[in-house]
Image (cartoon, rainbow over all chains, first blue to last red):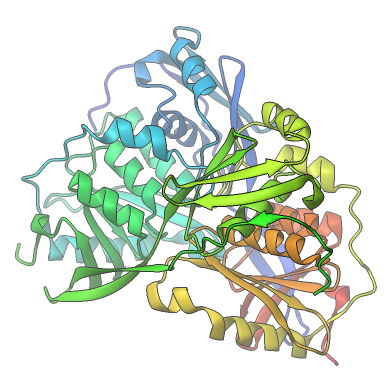
Length: 276
Length: 276
């Protein structure tokens, strides 16, 4: 990690991921079941309400930072003085150095944005990422892809215990085979935002990384990966037509249906190599 | 169907659900693959921009109406004169009778809302559904649940062909065993909104219906089902803690992990009966 020195005040308010209830099964028996938690978290930037996210709550500070980064509401981590989560009121207070000038402008301009196909960030984001250059000379080998698929499968704790969450992972694309982050959340957009927040905090670039998601790759997921500068995007699930079109335009390598030793390379196959 | 007489101008601009591309498989072979379409659709109400949804596009008019209904931007179908989709500009123009009075107020007041755990409708919606009464004397039998699970599995066309979509279904809860609607979309929130739109158009109440979703049941899905007055909510996937809490508060019967003859009844078990 090469995190720059910084005096950022951060709470550490991660919460337990599951909650125990009793359900009735098909035989009429009462059985104990663990279900994932879901908490509202309202983001305030300099006391101005920005959005309410529904989250598992395991890394709320990274989620907040990644949301502000991916929505392009704050361009630079140095502009942020504090990120303080208070679950008593389900809120996180972000304090900026300048008192919110650029944030405010963006907030006034934007329309409703979000995940799951409802209210996307599509318009603005496409303009912003059009000039983006992803590294052309980097390669992903089949062996490294297999390692990533196996590693993510082993790490899916909340999913295995309680289901109904998505997991996102970021790994180094080199011979060290290191999984940097693995974050689960009730929404796949939260999980990818939390990864973006972690990358910011640790000063990690995207160019030498591989991003993995258990969820579907829609246009918004591809846009977020591109914003983070990550050339490889892998999913256990499938892709949509617009994800495919945007990945083609940006020259991003998109791999889906990745389970065990089976996968499909949809775009950017020139960056993939069967040999080490 | 007991649709009231109405002079609503509706386009019929449904689009094909899949798109054919070529991908490279793990053996390095080029293989034909069908992927689900994803189109931006910007909703304008009386020329005022409301939101951009990313959709499969199979039932854009119902999706538009259901979105406006579930976001409580328009309270009554009688207030709408026309819903006209134009894919040339990826837009749908909604014309209201009054020229948007209540819509405008709601739009100004609300914060970012949406699915997938990002920007939910939680705050306002909880206030609105608190006084809601779901029918207490209705029953769902095990036999009818089995029929619904089997029927939805057979109907999942796009999913089977292309994956990466969610399906929502609405069925009558009586001895006719009739599946009224089955709608697939790239986001589960779009699919449930499109069902709400269809119900409006056909004048269908929720009280004697069962709602089925292939996707996870989060707080927002439960709130939407309650808004539509549907007492039974079934998912092939799991639930979150907040979905469970809201369902308990509203007395909604929540059934998850419903596959073949296996399922879990999380809440409202008193409405479920093993016998016919």
